Amino acid sequence: MKRVLITGHNGKIGNYLHSKLNSNDKYKLITIDKSQLDLRIEKDVENFFEKTSPNIVINLAAVSGNVYFNDKNQIQILEDNFLIDFNILKSCLKFNVKKLLNFSSNTIYPSIRVNDYDYLKEITDFFEAPFKSYALAKVITQELAGLYFENYGVCFQTIILPTIYGFVNSSQSKQDVVEAMLIKFTNAHSSNLDKILIESDSNILREFLHVRDLADWIDVAMEENILDKKIIFSSKDYISLGDLVKLIKEITRYDGRVEWAVNDIKSSSRRKLSNVSVKKLNLIQRVTIEQGLLEIYDMIVNKK
Image (cartoon, rainbow, N blue to C red; front, side, top):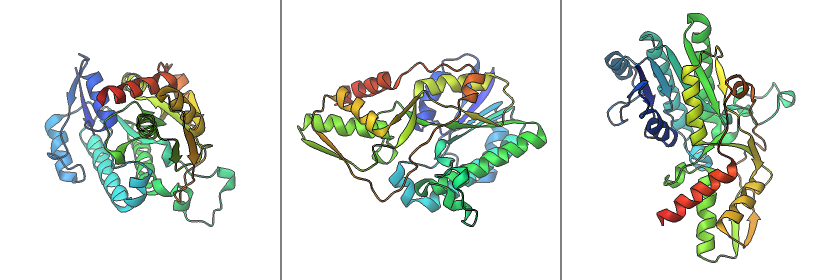
């Protein structure tokens, strides 16, 4: 039986993954609450690894939120994410962890294309402003894990995620765009509002992957001996926010007007990941965006 440590198990993705893996007899899950272990303290992390001896580590621990939370908490996000990831990487190496799956997101990529780069700019200017601190911390972790992979022969891999959805009951600062919009339109329908204002650009394109598919894919990545430093989970559901809103309007039966107002927080107009890893691992995306939206809507309505 493999001993699997899940950091960040109380987070949205971690909680779902823990529930899925907990029913699998192949794994003995190891978790600890952040009130009992501060992952920012190196010695405490080392002591925990020495005591629990995990074979596999799934690192989902992160300090992040929606675009507004990230924009206003840059220092905390950079400091905490760097310390957490560095301590976990060092302990994985020190205590001979067989496989590390370290998670990041597509927000780590620059907001402009390579052929548009102005090399006289600071490197930090390449990242989207709201996600700059998160991106810097995660890029450093990804590179360090890759160096361990190359120099020490350890299976330390970074998994890059698209926008993950499929949650309800999140605090407002942690809501993803899908949950937030479904709640907004559901409430507008109930209140008979004739207009909804969305502070974004309807032309922004994003990939969406349901957390149920994500959990299945992580299970595959844990077992497969794919020798890649980086694994990219891309999605077939690549749509604009405008088209997402059209689907949500239909599901919530909201027939009022939608107005778009671009806010001061700039975000990349496109984020599309490569599907090479998905093909290599033969991953199957089972939940369509339409199915996923309907499931979340039903959960929102039944919660009221």
